[in-house]
Length: 355
Image (cartoon, rainbow, N blue to C red):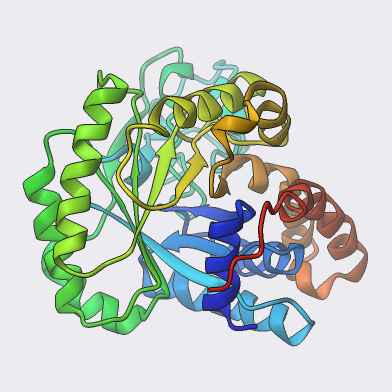
């Protein structure tokens, strides 16, 4: 089965699973391992930063996985039509950190992007590893001295046509926000200028941080739908329940499912996919809190939770001086964790529609 047919059947059957590597994640060794790992676990799509080095690392992992029996997987790249929390990186100057600071920033960082201050104050040029930081923002309020800030990290629209031709992804996700319908239209026009055929054009938006009601969000999505329809693009609506918080707890899973329930009767045509706060409790939330009449979403995207599940083995592989795919014992243990997350969704398929 081709990657196109497999992906479309999953979207139609409600068993679609996507791995979000992080729109600002540039940890190349870990990206290769993550892509190989979750491709072998059975995901249908992997979403990475729209960066040539990141895409090369992802393709290496996907090629390894297919060579070892994994099914074909879509490669999606993420961009934004404006400022977005998913496209930021934290930063601070460790020279300003008091020597006696307990560094709660280290404890709250889910990406291990902030090393303990083991070298003398002032000898580090950066307090945060920019390759690992994916912009969750948890360190910003954690700093007792207010030293941590954030900077924007995204591609400009003017480079999108040539960038898309270079990356040649199967799909693109555009992060958008209310009031940016003109910017969205300009971004889509730039993507179309790249002349890269896309399986789907995913649109990511939610309620949190925007002051929207479900009706407001539906209005924004219908505006986006008109733009996509004008270019003949097939939409995939990613409902961002509680952004970048899936590794926090069960409450975030409820938020993702609740957003889908509210948007289901209001959204424009196209598959509705859960994201933002999704984790191992999400499927249980669907089974327990959603009636048969409501149906099921097209699928789910896992981000921080999926990465945190296997982070101990990714880190151990780096400390061993190699990659997880070259460490059989660690690979098998990490793969069991990944399959435990992905497998129940693959078994939840509600139909077998032809693509």
